Image (tube, rainbow, N blue to C red; front, side, top):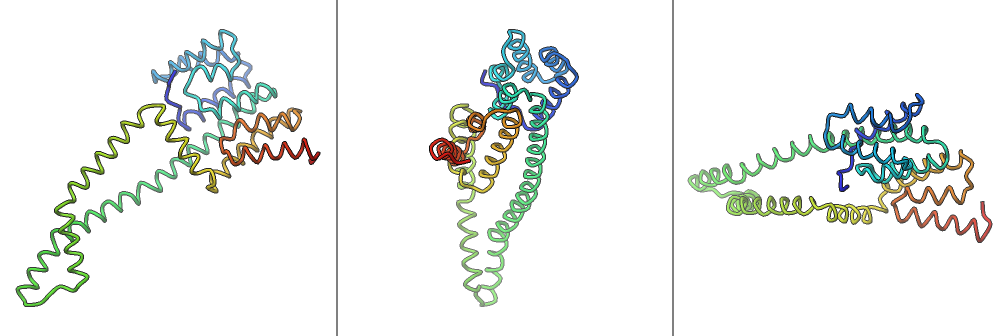
Length: 263
């Protein structure tokens, strides 16, 4: 459908509502219909309507979520694991907690970045005013007194003159570049390609390895506790991990189990 993916906050509430629906014994399609009727946002209501229609046609929950759009791959794959293992209720409860933590983390990051960024912009503005407006006045005063500015002050004043002469042009170029980038990233394919490029570049970051390990552990808990053999459990878990390094480790693990009879 090309629908924008739901945010972590909405996914947390949505998954908790589905967990409560299943726990209460309400048929899944009826529960989705109740959520659809209560939804005020038209885009989300359209997604829920499409999800309801897919469920009414008899589609499995994971396939219905995939067809409806708006849901991340992680949610769909986890739900598919829950279906195959008979732990769908547990999956939705775990997803609710996972996306609640993600939402809290995103808010913390925004708060941690926004305040220093505002202070930095204000500080740069004050420094530019000093360089462009104040230092030339001091230079005139020093010249009238027959003195000269120190080399550092003279260098700063020259920098201020350059910024005063070309600063607006540089700001315009940066602004135009940011606008062009924003327009290019409005295209879903380009945005997806940019995200994939960033993910490839960040695969070896510690935080990326920790996220991949966490997703692998979540999947193995569900699959192994349901009685699946370790080979099938690793196959299903590997679909949840988009970190290529971790996927290669899982493949090496399976190869060692198969060829070398390791535990």
